[in-house]
Image 1 (tube, helix red, strand yellow):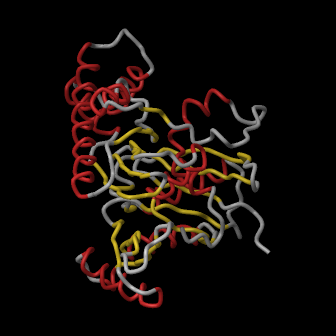
Image 2 (cartoon, one colour; image 1 turned 180 degrees about the vertical axis):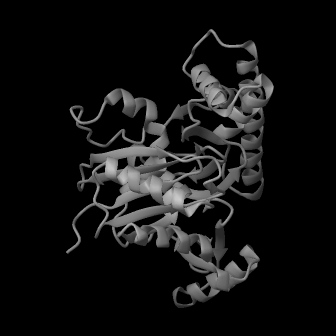
Length: 351
């Protein structure tokens, strides 16, 4: 009988994060760590340099003292090769799968032989004769298969494969429960910002905005004529409140914040225009490596007129302060949103 916890592996464009959490009702953190990736190793969710990614993951597992042989991994997929749509399907239970497949052909506009497709009926009572809300999920086969091949090369087996957006929402719901009204859970990654909208706790919409933490570093690099490492250091120093920085640093960060917030507002406005019976947004929650970028939370709050909170993915998880430095948990916590969400899954989960 399988009893060991899943090894949650989040492969992003700038780093790999691994988390292992055990326990039933009371979860306990067993392992956590990250390994940086060089630029270009992973682009838009696809591995461009398999050897580098494999080596980085091997190093991380070794450093965390996780023996991969025989273990089950939970992995998350993201990028433009992952497709998520919420649709309404009018069909009897025994006809739902067939109708959903037909809808997938219309929605994804791709060769269905090149896509893995799954669907999840949205929980809640549905009136007789009314459409059933369904989350339709697709991922290109080449992406799925390259991730599974990587896991197998390490001597592991795949236990759970899901979209990174769902992992983030799973982590959020575990820690914060079902938030009433329309809320946005926003993951600011290295290359993209992932927006997930929830209404009364139900997942209703997702979109990726092509701005992430790397955009801040790129603009600083160009404007100040410094290398990438120095630009990254300036971005971090600014976010940590250091004052002795060139005036141009905060100016550039503020400009990108404005651009990102404008795209975020556009995303929310589009959803509200397409939806009925849903009022204005009531709360925003931030996670990801860019969640603490200087002034971003304040800019979102000022524009959307809602409270903005940075998520602590470990809020409800038992952490042994003798093993883990609590300061690191607080500072680095937002980086682990997807990995924590994955680690909360169980083998065979289907939602």
